Image 1 (cartoon, rainbow, N blue to C red):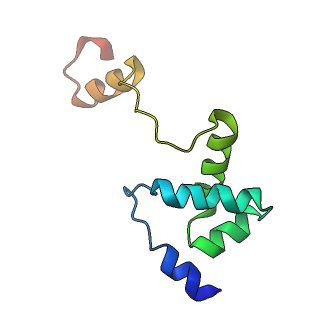
Image 2 (tube, one colour; image 1 turned 120 degrees about the vertical axis):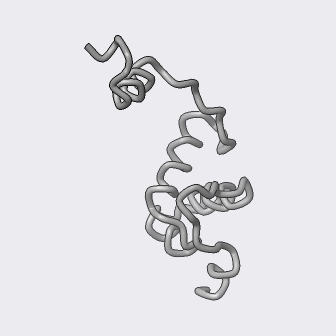
Length: 90
């Protein structure tokens, strides 16, 4: 069983996104009553990623990636204040 898990997944880098197929495998394992820990070990995916996929699936009914939101004012203000050249910093 261990060899199957290494064939199914590979190490994820920080910026890599899990494929739709692998997210589907996570949901399939969840529906077969596997625990988050078991799924994580089986697919060699961090538990936090597995948990996030399952939570998103329960809330939204999908595992597809959603578009990222635009920068909000707090993020913009923080970015501008780092340069210390903006009026909003005072």
